[in-house]
Image (cartoon, rainbow, N blue to C red; front, side, top):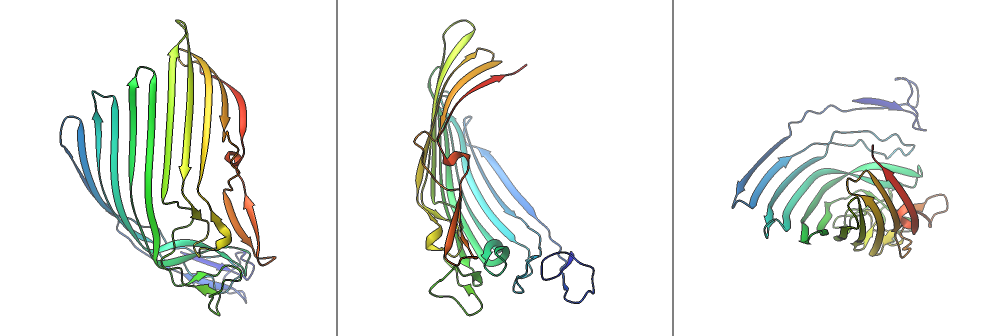
Length: 297
C-alpha cells in the first residue's frame, strides 16, 4: 500500500519536492472457531472465539503529525443461549461477549487541519451482554424487547488529540485518553415495541403499534471533551393503521419522536473559533407526524 500527498492532502507524483511518501505492507491470517449444543428441543447453547483484522491506512492531512495507521487486530469471545419457550409463545435469546482490539483505529478531531484523522489507540476493550425477547401472549398481540449493556473503553490510548483549552495537554497537542469510553457508545440501550392487530372484516384488519427507545449518556469525543457530552434520552414512536389481510395495501397514520426530544446526532468543536461547538441533527431529532400509503403488487 502506497500513497504520496503534498501539504494540502492532494495526491501528487512521487519525487515532487514537498511530497510525503509513506509505505506499508502487511499480511494476516484471520479465523473463527465456534460450536453449539442442543440442551433440549427448545434450548440451544453456543460459544465462539474469533480473531479478525482491519488493514492499515494513511492520513491525507495538512497536519505533519498525522501518523501512519497500523492494522487493527480484534480477538473476541462470545457465548449465549437461544430458546423458544412456553409452547412457542416466548422467544428468548441471551448472549455475552468480551473483545480486545490491539491498535484500535480511533478517529479524532485535528485542530491543525480542521478535520478528522485516524489514530491507533494501543488497546480497546469491549465487553457486555444482550437480551432479545419476543412474546406472543395472545392472538394478534406481540411484544419485542431488546436490552444491551456495553462497557467499551480505551485500555491504552496515549496520543489522543486534545480538545480546545483542555487543562492537561502535552506540548505536542496530545493527551492520554486511557480509561475513556468509546465515543458515542452508551452503557445501556433498551428498546420495547408492542403491536396489536385484529381483523375488522373478512378482508381488512386494523393495527396499533408503539415503540420506546432509551439510552444512557455518552460522549462524542474519545478525549471526553465536556462540551461534547450527550445526556441519556428516550424516544417514543406510535402508529395506527388499516390494511388488507394479505398485506397488499396498507394505510398508516404515524408519529415519530412523538414528544419532540431534540437530541443531536453529533456534537463537535469548531477549530476556526477555538471553543465554539456545532451540533448536527437528523430526521429522528424532530417530531414527525404523517400518513403513509403502501402497496405491494
